[in-house]
Length: 468
Image 1 (tube, rainbow, N blue to C red):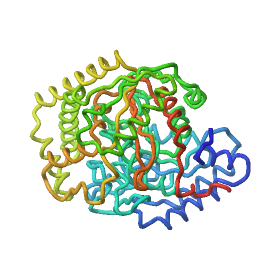
Image 2: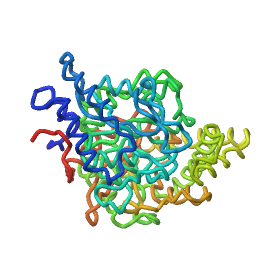
Image 3: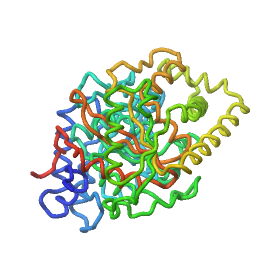
């Protein structure tokens, strides 16, 4: 298959001597400077990146999959030594992390070199990345639109070619929505696949998972191979069937693919987005897979229950984190107050509701192997579509659910979900989502390979430092 240039290709160029980690880092820093108006990067640590790149060039020749590849961490979730994580909030002191989190250490062991932190909405509470403290993250494909959230800066940086892939987290679509907005690959892994320790600050009752946004299925598979397993709790390690990269081009055996929404139940989904799903379904059918229409109504109760679980857990977690609300945005303060009002009984009921959602999705997968849905209901939203200068939390959650109606279900159930590019509409990327059963991450990546073969992906911006 004709692969788009990606992080693995850049690492191969470094290993072969066609370029160096130091030269690649300088190119990434230069591109970051050129792309400053996109607001993708909240904190740049140029000298830190240069120092680690030089050490990479001077070190022993090892076979890390991403040897010498520049990398950006997200301003939320796993921390990397020397980089401050403040969740785009004035309420958190900008102190450099004293040590790598478990996930950041695995990124480094894979050869990636962090040199900055990407923009998020304050505390990750939005599907856009427009924090009051700035910068505002813009979509490289149309700067009047958002690159999504909460991993919006990460997606903007990858789409702009500052880096080939970047750290991302997902508690309600925050990997997949930015990937869809920017025409990238975004996998929310199976619950427990990647480590959340040692602090587990982004645990969120099991809603959150962490990995990357990237330009290729190869990079996503290789990153998951490098980071998954031995997560040291709190969940059992899922058996993902690694190495996933080595099996990426093995076509799946005939599958039962549930297609949602079907032609009669597409309310709220734009025509172009629905056509992308139907086209993807046709690709699968021509490859020998059996399609099974899934009416949207069959998922409605699961989606509503997922929204309740998301609301309670996110609100209570922010209430736990924040004491003084005077330094945060109005929406953040309102979410924290909402969490303070949640009783122990209500929180326990939310946990039990989440269990029922997981059971309901397991039951669905008794009859199908993979669920195919739209990722977004329309094109990437315009900047300002998710304002945070108000306290109407219910309105904010509703706006996000309308943008990505099938996102939160996978977080609450703990199953893997993959957003992949599939066509264009008026010059903007279309995307579809594949949701699989627990530990079905590799299956989703291999199935997506069929879509990539039919509609190969193109990127306007080259990756900084990639030799011609």
